[in-house]
Amino acid sequence: MGASGSGKSTLMNIFGCLDRPTAGNYIFEGRNLTTFDDDELAYIRNQRIGFVFQQFNLLARATALENVMLPMIYANLPQPKRRERALSALRMVGLGDRISNRPNQLSGGQQQRVAN
Image (cartoon, rainbow, N blue to C red; front, side, top):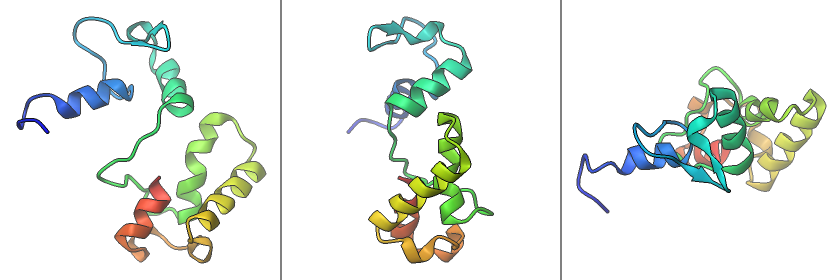
């Protein structure tokens, strides 16, 4: 949709609170995110912004279940609740029988479902 080097990825990284703008302000839901610290940005990213990455960014040594549970730590959910939600999510996307598999044991499509 744009020439290489035109800033598409940079813009998306700023929108997703992964990078900070070098100039100007980023107003999101009426708040100036350029004044937020890393923890505040992580909270916004976790609670208000969703991602579908080209790379799946799964932890190679973690199971599908562990990879799904990991982001819920930042929501301060207790471990049993994280497990319950992760199991439910994996079942919903047809991976209930793959919870113990590591990423290298899953197809690309299965990895994408775990990541999203």
